[in-house]
Amino acid sequence: DTEVTQTPKHLVMGMTNKKSLKCEQHMGHRAMYWYKQKAKKPPELMFVYSYEKLSINESVPSRFSPECPNSSLLNLHLHALQPEDSALYLCASSQEEQSNQPQHFGDGTRLSIL
Amino acid sequence: DQQVKQNSPSLSVQEGRISILNCDYTNSMFDYFLWYKKYPAEGPTFLISISSIKDKNEDGRFTVFLNKSAKHLSLHIVPSQPGDSAVYFCAARGNQFYFGTGTSLTVIP
Image (cartoon, rainbow over the protein chains, first blue to last red):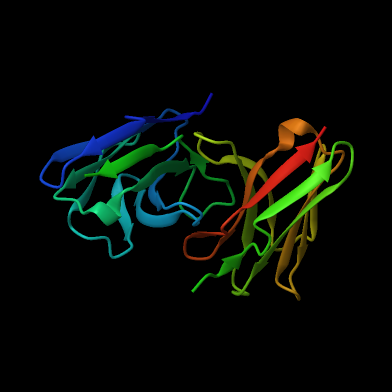
């Protein structure tokens, strides 16, 4: 069983829709991450939150909006996405952003944009 | 430009034999290296890691070797089991984690 829970597992949305991806961890980790992964490519970092503050934004378009309501939750709000945004979105957490501790991943949300 | 590379997209090994997965990186400032295992429809699962101050770390059937001068990382699995069949990603930490493209390992019974 994964310790990082992502919902929903699958999401199909139109380009004008607004939806949110959710991620939850209860390991007491203080760093949380969003990654985007396309087929046969490595995960690409989108955002990092450290102690509930945005630490890294890898020049992600504003149609992706992250939110960290508390230390256990991480959301990714989606609006006006493009077909090329279809991908697997992975959430991860780690004890601290720069610690020698691994990231723990959720199972991802498979997003399809029509 | 890929800072972490796994040049073998796939590998097949007989059950009981050794599996060796390789990974190369370009940035000498990377200080922490990891291997993840991924089954279909699941997220990557942490397998084993190594700090740049070491050259070997062992955990049961899994051993990671680090050759800093060659900027090369390898994962040895011995003996290989059918349940080890999965995609293996290496990762390295600089200012963020950088991942390779993965190697699909098939262990043949």
